[in-house]
Image (cartoon, rainbow, N blue to C red; front, top):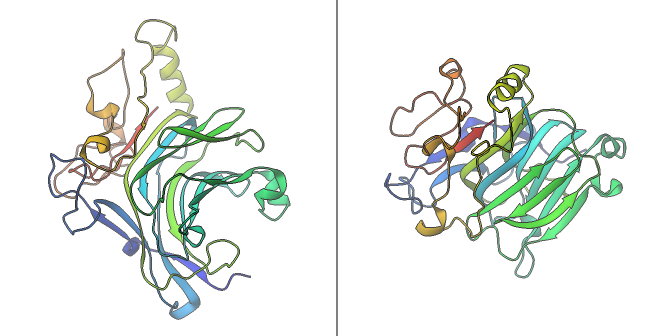
Length: 308
């Protein structure tokens, strides 16, 4: 039994876009790092023993094989688990998790995890089935923004940081579609999140990109109709690699298909379908035309781009 429970609340999600719409980095309009802040409330939990935390999920649940990338700055406050992950259920999950209690002057690891059916049978301990690695990072995740990424194939998952391959896993690879998530939480478990944090712990996200295969039959038929030959000229679009941390104006400027002219015939990006305007779309300053499951701050403090 864990010491505390978790209380996911919209109050723990704060939008702090850039002061200038022409910049790619800098302070937000509320001061401090620009982006979406996901907060775990510090101090001893009040009624019910629930620790307030934040979580963001996609509306779409057809997210299948693909490449998933997030620009993030983790908290340096001990006692939380910050996570960028794909999820269907406890036996199909791809995780990049950061335990702030593990950060110290010489070590700043990321926990790479594939939750599988075998893992569930062992009590959700991925270490027992080989689908876990505590991987050291050559930087402190709480001191700046970095791109964290996982590429999900049918037979493996590749994990990256700032475009550098960290590790490949082939055991327990998910086989069904699900959805993408960002969260930061604590339940006081001394073997994982630790905590609760003594003060509010902030994880900031400045973009999320997802390039994936949709599991929806209609989307698959549409793709088959418009892509007769994958090897034909301009049949596919290159996704540029991030090779440096997205921290300053030069390196923070990143590529989005939704900001480019069509690179191939009948290219489809988030927002192209007028029938999907009921999906999540918000802007902090201006009205943004219906973005299908896309989150876009007008000043580019955060852009969530889906392309399938």
